Image 1 (tube, one colour):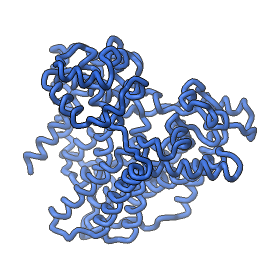
Image 2 (cartoon, one colour; image 1 turned 180 degrees about the vertical axis):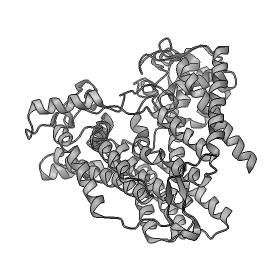
Image 3 (cartoon, one colour; image 1 turned 45 degrees about the vertical axis):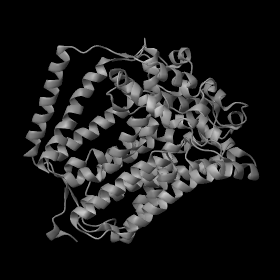
Image 4 (cartoon, helix red, strand yellow; image 1 turned 90 degrees about the horizontal axis):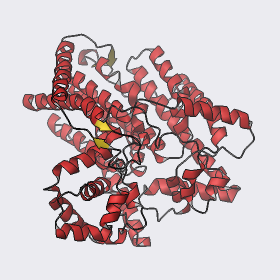
Length: 541
């Protein structure tokens, strides 16, 4: 066990040391850049020296902090004293009021092309989560029944804002119960209320906001499970919160893997502790798997639809495209197979290192052939890997650049200023939304001048720590926890780890902070982890 802990520590420190260097080595102009605009510069001996310096510095820091007393907050052996309190409700109301000007400006809310497609085609857009797809369509139709689609979407958006405010407030209330000072809580209330990125997401109908909101509940459940000495799974409040958090499964594709991997870790922990497995865990896991299977079986049986393979293999497609574009080693059989998906000329023309969308959404891309030959695809994909390992690694690094690098803030798929008003909802082609740009609501509750000021403030100050930097901070804190021998705290953060890993393994685009919005939501808790300690059993209440 000691060897495993030591190896894990050195692996993370190695990662933390490589990332700053690799970030500096990547030449990046824009997300639509070609292989001549986005590439990796050659490494030198000075990079090796810098790596050693960073590695030794982090290692030395971990050894120094090991003997320092930094514990400030005691985690008490209780779940939650109350789900609701006057202060908790006031914080929720304060956040909602703070977001209201943005809601009025962009009513019924902002969104992307995906949301419009889901509303118009609730069943056939199978690359989107089934249940979120269904909820959008239900409120779309409710709006048409009442008066207009915008009213239904506005109602859905407001409900989602309430859920977001409840989850963020609950996180802060949870921290308060850990003994965190009120000043820290109030500072984060102000950040969640007024830092533009948060109201921007609050009024956006993209699925990532609501997923990240339920993800907070899931994180709290898992963290309490591993850090509280008492068996919290047998407490009613924990069971309720855990069941509520399972809603995230229907809100994003990777949530199933996050949930499943977390449950497996919990079951192994039960076995390690030699405790009987709680029936609640098994029951919820069975329900989740059943619902997930149901959505796929329903679509396939009722409509003959199934998820496009291209939606699940974005990075392999990028690796194939880069190999062909750079004239890597490709034999005749591989060339003939991939040529039936896309011509060699189109592979080269459509390949952009930072996004696979230009390939899989091109009219010439043969989805039907790919869907009918999945085994053959992976056969030739793996055979081509043998002679093109370096190219494959480069393709993965560039296509996930924003999620691991210490890059500067990027507004791609992060700044949402296009209202889904009557004009946007009735476009003959939803893809035309991309050309519209900023667009306000149809209402006259506030003046056009006021809307311009709100939008300008949103655009000017919309920013946060980049996704890759958030991941670096999280892993650096894991190193501190290792040094302090707080492994239960590390296991308590496994949902964050699994969520991040599933993104860097399969992201279709290099920059999309909305995929990692959970980092922004949970950062107040992540930063405090090194300063928490478990309550002494003798003093437990």
